[in-house]
Length: 313
Image (cartoon, rainbow, N blue to C red; front, side, top):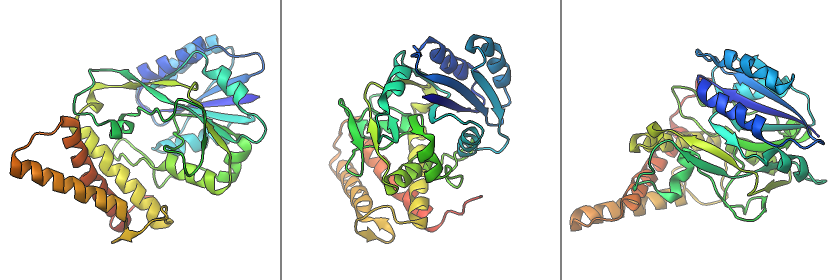
């Protein structure tokens, strides 16, 4: 198995160094031929120097590519195109892989398996706030879906996340490149490229496995543990989903004004609870109150993305 591990990065030299050092600490089994490729997505910091400093420790298996077009999808597509291993893995620059991550990668691809993914465990940069809703922990990249191995299919309760995944190169070639219309940049928090890729994989009939032992530890900085960040993330996540639905209907459910009826219903129930709290002067747990706020933001973002947003690409 020849694994190309791609790390797209932009202006995160300290976190990138931690990510690369976690790969050095991980046990690499003898039957795994590993190459790590850092795709520098127009960084202005010391990203290139960090990679160059660590290259001797990788014994020729750490490469650097510069991608000037801003956006993670551009960086990933460039990394995929400029590597050639039988398998392609991806982690984010703010993550550290578990010491047995490479072992699980090497042994997971039984015949017929096209891709694998696993959980994101939080590495807290500040105290977890009381208002943080567990139904929205994915906003900060905290993803734990199942305690046992599971199949990625339409009944799976989550999806394949692009910061902890490995594909066969053959299935990526069939699925095509990551969508650059849904690109996240420093200005826009569009975040649908992973979900778009996941839906395309399922449409191809690709077979994937969720592995709870394929764990990464995701750094959560204090600036993401704010209500403002959650509201902004949820809005742009909604815009992303609306854009995807505009190009191809994503849900086999009833729609209301171009929006899935369950999204409208969830927002309506949240609004009713919020009004009831105001009228009765009732205080609910802070996570429940904020959940209701985010449900309304979800609806606003989806509607904007579906009907009004004009992509720059």
